Length: 134
Image (cartoon, rainbow, N blue to C red; front, top):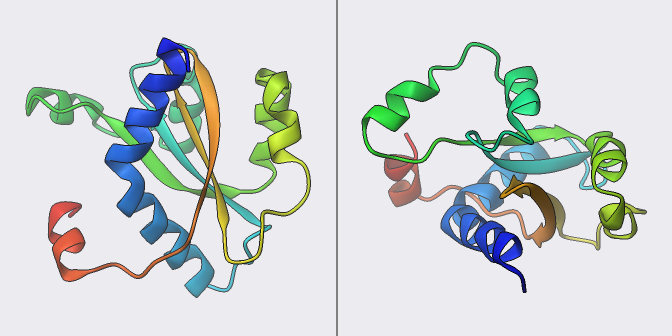
């Protein structure tokens, strides 16, 4: 694993619980696992800043930086995002073809100048996570 892949793995690990909860919420709203993708984007990565601006225009990321935290955009998006990612990062195309395995949702972690694809099992939000991510 190279340094940028390791950086994305760490970003995924730090956000793993919340990403599974976002997948659960999307499924609860009636979306199917092949209709959505969960994204986790390092807001300060210049490669992906255009996408953050598109997905969350006008969001006050500076307030997060002012608290000494790293701003990360997380949310559910249409599975059409797979096409965009395949265009920007062609070596991911194979990981984005076809539906995800039953009971799983794809997660795209964008940062360190690249992208990595993971799978998550949707899970309900817990009381503790609701407080931590409020």
